[in-house]
Image 1 (cartoon, rainbow, N blue to C red):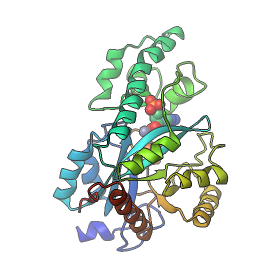
Image 2: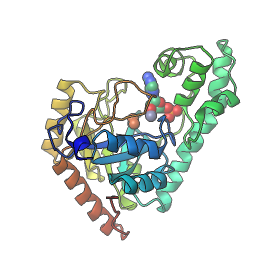
Image 3: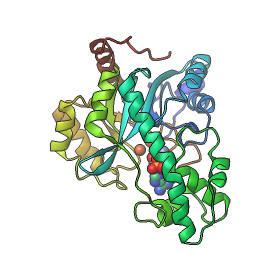
Image 4: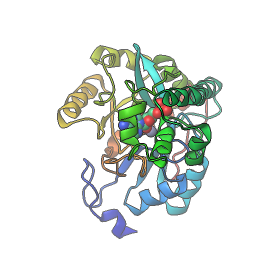
Length: 311
Ligand code: AMP
Ligand code: ZN
Ligand code: FE
Ligand code: FE
């Protein structure tokens, strides 16, 4: 185990011999990753990570299994979710860490998002049929496995299975992306309301890949982010594959100016996304400490049990 921990991993800010390695944003097959929560935790441990954040899209379905696996291998697990939100008319992903799953307003919004995703499915398939691609709900179900958040990635997998495209990326480029013939709008939560719901649940909020090239991030300028901080935003995910070096430097400076926590993560999806290997970006230990401190304070203010990080 010591050997695995001191082995040099993929490049990242905290990748030094013996350093604590922290990856705070990953997906299991309970959303659109390809590994079970157990396999994800085991792999994270085997690859020398010390702390793992499990952040499936809009669902906490993988938490219990991940907790058991983390206890088994001795890895610290930070339970989270990545919530689909909108801000100023644009899509934004919000990482929510350590919220109480029993908090009604949060649970209600997550259900609404998941319902929006599943009710979009037949509409998407109808659009695809219009452009000559015969694919039905069963084709998607077959590849979707254990997911609680069936969405475009699974439609993409079904298209790969049918030989229409070679991988998920091509499916998004040709059919499922915002300008594709199969694109259908779906419900997402209001970002400011969601940040408040996460705080109400005793958790903390971090904007995922705020300036990722594939998203329109017009609304997330300095003023927009400052406004979000006033409703309770705790941090920004700065080190992410979808940010180039210059973007990271600018975002880091903004986070420093505003006093926001800076995180870094892989956004690993197993075989579902290339160039997102576990630990390819990491979070500095002192930044995680600040985040956990804010989470503990949030839990106390919300009069909820201080959420434990599995050790
Ligand atoms: P949905 O939740 O159904 O709208 O699907 C959105 C999810 O699809 C995102 O959160 C990503 O994980 C995934 N995704 C988006 N674009 C791509 C892409 N080009 N290749 C692979 N996965 C993607
Ligand atoms: Zn995803
Ligand atoms: Fe995301
Ligand atoms: Fe993600």
